[in-house]
Image (tube, rainbow, N blue to C red; front, side, top):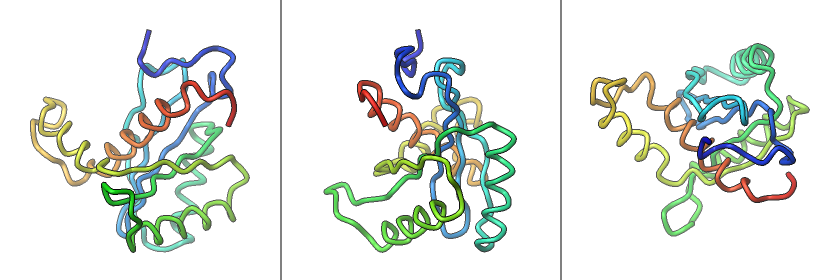
Length: 157
């Protein structure tokens, strides 16, 4: 059984979750169908060229993947303090809420990019090096893994 498997009575059972790692230039995306996929996987990245382009691409991904829930990472310092990037990411969350009716959850993404870099450096899939074109999507998969772990024993969303 996968580390990311949830009980069949969990609200996320067989739901498709999309996670995003917000960035001013790129937004990393990862997906996971709970109890169908073995683990969250990097999907790709959206070039952050402006609100209309982001919404259009995100809508396409949501429709293509039959997404049921969106998770967006919020960066903090390791001591929990907010940064200017936290405010920008929170504004992004609010923007997404205005444009989509899907449930949206926030997830602390502290050290997600650091973890993504470490995984890439230790994986033959990435030739044991950091691939800047894929780092955002890998970070989004870390955010999604953390969200699943956090909600595993949560009775409802």
